[in-house]
Length: 95
Image (cartoon, rainbow, N blue to C red):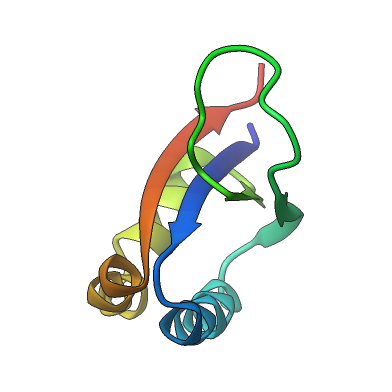
């Protein structure tokens, strides 16, 4: 069953953020993924959301998503991510 990672982001340092994004792209290369959406928030229609950017990445299943997230390659990017932006990462499984 497909699994989805949703990242909601507020960038603090755009140069560091671009380095992080490039590193994530490289880290995803050996996993079965597809970037569904990457974009900038245009409106919040209900509730509160202070994040400016969002990304949705599709994985073949939750195990693959977790293997990627816990991989040495991605874990090595986390300090860069945390310096570059405020990020909320949530995972979902398709019904």
